[in-house]
Image (cartoon, rainbow, N blue to C red; front, side, top):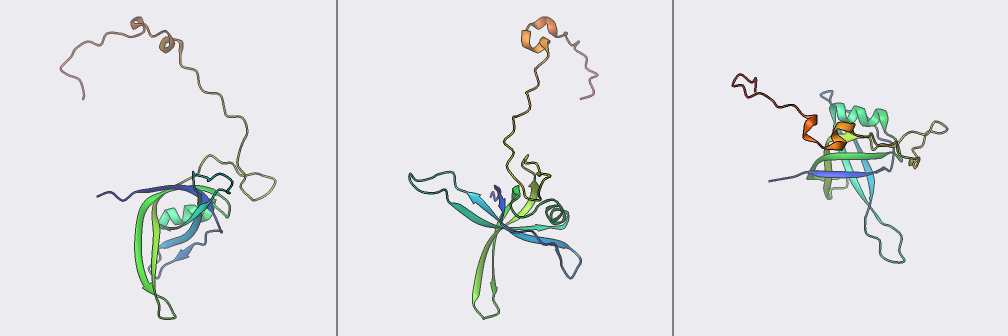
Length: 150
């Protein structure tokens, strides 16, 4: 069976680092993930997804991300139930993150908010001339030897 979830969205609030009774770091936060389809004449809609991070991943998120930050999350979808203080049973569906990444966005030094970077993309590296020509003379014949290390 396969249970992998990959999301990219913006944090709706600052993440807060907490510690369990056993001393394990944990944080939970919500991201807004825009839908790719927009009906004609309507605004783009977003889904709000709950994320949980443990240990070093939780510490990383709390250190480098804040409200409005664009974040990429990879993890597993998990569901759980619990009883609220008022006695009602609650159902929760959340992503337990294994890997969290920056998305290439740069922090604006003039303020603390993240803003999309729409500057010119860096030029692509040009391949070496030997690869551009595509001739066989650019390569050497490898001698056949039974003593290869692999």
